[in-house]
Amino acid sequence: MFTRRITQKDTPGLVSQMGQDLEETHVMVRRMQQWAGETGLGDLAEALRVAARAISEATGTAQDAYRAATDKEGGDR
Image 1 (cartoon, rainbow, N blue to C red):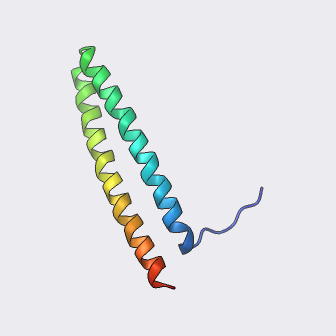
Image 2: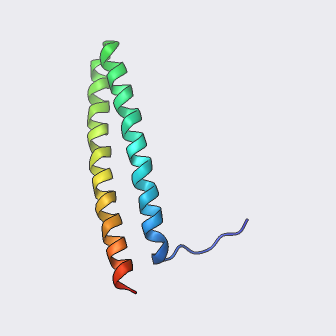
C-alpha cells in the first residue's frame, strides 16, 4: 500500500475531517444520552452528558485549529 509522510499542507484537510467526525460523534452520544435517560439509566445518561460536552469542546478546538491552519496556509503563499 502506498503511504507518504503527512505534511503541513495536509493539516487543513485532516483537521476538517476530524471536526466532521467529532460533530457526528456528538450527535451519536447525545442520542445515547437521551436513550439512557428515557430508560432510567441516570448514571449512564450523566456520563454521556459529560462526554458530549467534552466532544463539543473538542469540536470547537478543531474548528479553531482549522482556521489557524488555513490562515497559515494562506499566509505561506
